Structures are given as structure tokens and as C-alpha cells.
Image (cartoon, rainbow, N blue to C red; front, side, top):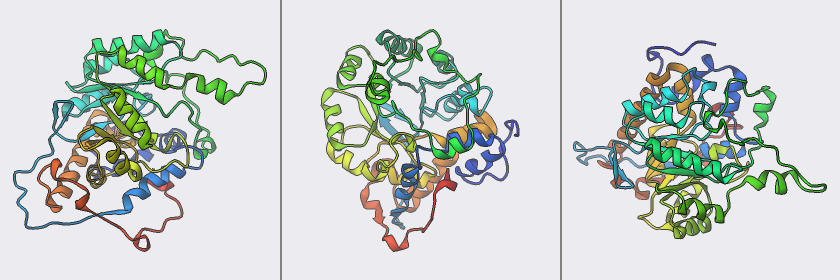
Length: 380
């Protein structure tokens, strides 16, 4: 495979082009691991199909010459509503891993959300990143380790904690298994070194590997309450698809929610994140912060997610692809392209600001006009 480039390839014309070009920079088993979802990849395909069910209505004659993409989130102004999702073990695609992604985030005034399972420590990422950075938290088997991760994030200058709640069980995608992917020995979660993160769960005779095994480590409502009591940072929850869960999380005092199905990597057959986004927005009201994750591939996708209720979006796979092609330069370029694609969509839809984007900007696409594809696997 090719080594990461030090310049932008001339064939990159849009953000999604990084996905195709990454085939030359990521070995097939790793690429299938990144691209795949869970099981039969049903939710993976649903995430992309959901964007095709909406069309953006052009609104000419509006003056958008004073337009911009600035938003305010948790009383902080961001230059644009595009955030870098927590992507684990980025050494899979680049030797400098998350440090390169952090450099790109700093150069583009983008909020980076560093993963618990990053290849680099959260402290090293924070030093390489710009002023806006959040930390994604996985519950650890021992509360002392979970607490220590939060204290480290607070000390390193992260502005928020994002708890992922939907990924305790991750069934590998069949395409990943067929490709023969195995995690390389040098890809370890640097933040977890020294913790008992992989201590085996001992089961009694007759106990389930799922219920009494894996789910023993799953976050619970009581765990959430403990986290809220033990961090000084705003706590977001990622992996919300049901309105009742959204209302209960809101009532418990979380700072915001991320409507996400983990990019199709959690429960295969769960609904597309975009399809439930309006329901979640209705459940929590217009003022409560909502982020969107799962399926973003273009600035028009960003526009549609904003129109259906998101305050900002998270981009995952595209950042891995861009990182593999050209390191920090590639990630920064990918973000710039997404932002320009969003600006173009806004301008043609007559929206000068993100605040003007709403559901009235969209029209539902009749089923007979949707693209007929046997599989969306090639999109990932």
C-alpha cells in the first residue's frame, strides 16, 4: 500500500473522493474493518439510504452575501457545525495516528472528540489539538479507571465528556470477517495502559456470555448518575435512538445527546440515525443540544441533518480515509471540502446562516424516484 502523501492528490474533487482513494492507502482487511458495520450491514446501508429520502429545495433570489456557518454550542462559538467523531485506533491508517488528526482540527478550528480507545494518549492529543476538544468515554470495568480517565480529560483541557452507551456489544460485519481482519499487535489503546481494561469476565456454570458476561460492563442509569456527580465537565450521551431515552437523559441533566447508531456498528437492523432525528428533536424540544452521527458523506448530508434537527454533525469514516491518504493535510482538506459543500448547499437553498436551516428546506422524495441499489456496500 502507498505511504501517506505530503500534498493533496489532484483527483480529489469532493470530500467523498477520499473514500475511494483510500483503497490505495489502506490494506483491504483494515479497509473492510473500517468500512463495515455489524452483521449483514443492514443499518450501515439504511444510514445512507435515509439521506436519499430527502431533497433540498432551491430558493433563488435571496441575498446570502453576508452568509456564514458559525454556530454556538454550549456557549462556545464554532466556525462551522462539523465535528470530528471519536474514531478509535487511528494507527491502523497512519503511523502518527490521532496526532495528525488533532493537528488538522487545530488548523481548521474544528472540534475533535478524542476516543478512549485512541492510539495516542488523551494528553498527547490535547497538546496537538486546537482550543476546542472533547473526550469520548467508554465505561471501564473498574470505576476507579473510569474516574481516572475523566480526571485526566479535565486536567488536559477537554471541554466536555461524551459517554458512548450503545457499543458494549459489537458484532463484527460479515465482510470484515471474510476479509480476515485481525487487530495488529502495535494497535493498542494508549489511554488504557495500566488499567485492567481487558480483565476476563468469570462466569458461573449456566450463565450467559451475553447477559452475565458482556453486558456486565454496559453503562446503566445509575452509572450515568454517578458520572454526572463526578465530573465538572458537561456530559453528553452518544448512541440515543429512542425518544423515551432522550427525554429521560434530558431530565437527568446531561448537556446534550448524540443521535447515533454507531455508524451501523452496533445493533444491525436498528433504524437509520437520520430517520429518528426528527422524533428525538420533538421529544427534547427546540432548545436542547443535539448532535447527529452516522452516514455523513457530503456537505449536503450535513445540511439535511441540520434541517431535521441537529445542531451539528460528527464525521467518522471520512476522517479515517482522509488521514490515510494525506495525514493532517488530508483531514484538514476533507473538512474544508465538507464546509464548502455545506456553504454551496446553503447558498442555493437561500440560507445565509445555519439558524435558517430547518425542515421547510427539505422535501420528501417519492419512493419510486429513489435510486434502486441492490447493495450500498460500495458506499463505505
